[in-house]
Every structure is written in structure tokens, then in C-alpha cells.
Amino acid sequence: MLNLVLFGPPGAGKGTQSEKLIATYHLVHLSTGDLLRSEIRAGTELGLRAKMLMDQGILVPDEVVIGMIENKLNENQSAAGFIFDGFPRTVPQAEALDQLLAQYNTGITVMVALEVDEEELTKRLLIRGLSSGRPDDQNEDLIRRRVKEYNDKTAPVAGYYESQGKFKAINGIGTIEEIFQAICEKIETA
Ligand code: AP5
Image 1 (cartoon, rainbow, N blue to C red):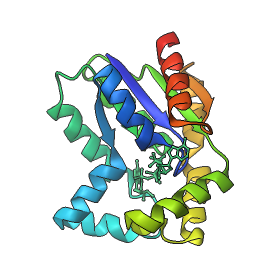
Image 2: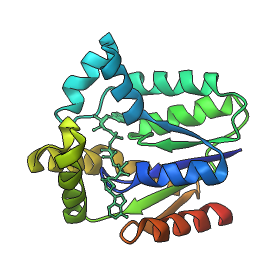
Image 3: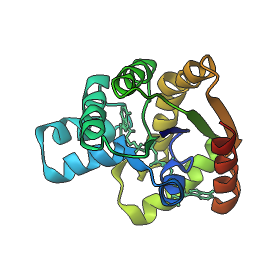
Image 4: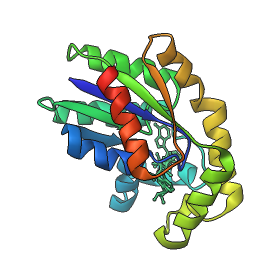
């Protein structure tokens, strides 16, 4: 199995690159942000609780996202592999993911981190906010709050994979195709 963690701050291009990667490698795309937004659209209790946090740029509790990922792994047992997008976002999430994958006798193949500076991230998300209606893209203070949440709670996840020899970083600034090729190189050499 090929199990990829696509890592990076808000607006780094994880979702954009996931779309290209699933077409090439035939992987199942698991984005916790997308899963949470579909709970919000369905008006579930989980969605209502998550929305209050997401609209403030704050991470939802670990047990909520770990439970969603566990369900999706169970539903996709014959998959060729997974792209984890926006998950894991804390070290306890990374540890839980390793334990879940071990139940299927598999593990993370590689983590590819998209490196993009804060000014570029802010610019991309403000532009998207003009057309997407995503509440967390609507103002610069909120976008900077999301980046701070990433720096405080999510960036340490890179060290978790580095200690396992699975961390690969690439420049996330450039054309979508250039970045896609760089990710593919990291996957092929992993
Ligand atoms: P989530 O939905 O995961 O959002 P995010 O990490 O903030 O990331 P984005 O989707 O905004 O960015 P992206 O890196 O996917 O970039 P994209 O390809 O879209 O999470 C939302 C919230 O849910 C979190 O804040 C949290 O509250 C909660 N949550 C989710 N997962 C969680 C977890 N595991 N634990 C706890 N809470 C969780 O691109 C962005 C824009 O840039 C697009 O407009 C795109 O067209 C453009 N773009 C892409 N590539 C390029 C390029 N190369 N050049 C120029 N523009 C580009």
C-alpha cells in the first residue's frame, strides 16, 4: 500500500495536489476538513460543534477526527492506499493513525510537506475567500489565527515523521504542475 501524508499550513495546496495525486496513484483521499464540512452541511451534532471551532480557526478535538478517520479506514479496506490531507494535525493524531494502520498491517509510507511562507498563504486564502464562501477564509485575522494554530500545534508533527525517516519537504511555491512533479519524485524515492 502507498499511504501518503500530505502536510503543510492552511493554503499550502494540500487539497489541490491531492486531486492530481488520486488520479495518478488511485488512492483514497481522506481530508478531515472535507469530512467535517460535510458533517456541517448535514447539520449533525458533530458538525454543529465542529463549526464553532472551525469558524474561529481552532482545531477540533483529536478524538473527533480520529473517530472519523477510523470509520473511513474501515469503509475502504480494499483501497490501494490513502492520501491523508489535513490529518494528522497533532502528535496524538499521528500516534493514533499509526495504531489504526497497524491493525491493517500497514503504515505511513512517506510524509511530504509543502513549504509556503505566511504572506503567500494569506494571499491565496484571501483570494479564495472572495469566491468560495468558506467562513474561515473571510478575513486576514482569521487566516493568521489558522496559521498560528498550525505553527503551535501541527508543525511538531513533522518531527514525529522525521524521527521515523519518513519526512520529505518540498517548495510549495511554483506552478501546480511543478509542485505535483516534486511530490511524485518524493513518492517514487520513498
Ligand atoms: P482544512 O479544510 O484541512 O483546511 P486547511 O488546512 O486550513 O487547508 P486549506 O484547505 O485551506 O488549504 P490546502 O493546503 O488544502 O490548500 P488548497 O489546495 O485548498 O481544515 C479546516 C479546519 O477544519 C481547521 O482549521 C480545523 O478547525 C478543522 N480540522 C481539519 N482537520 C483537522 C484535524 N485533523 N484536527 C483538528 N481539526 C481539524 O489551496 C488553497 C488555495 O490556494 C486555493 O484557492 C488554490 O487554488 C490555491 N493554490 C493551490 N496551489 C497553488 C499554487 N501552487 N500557486 C498558487 N495558488 C495555489
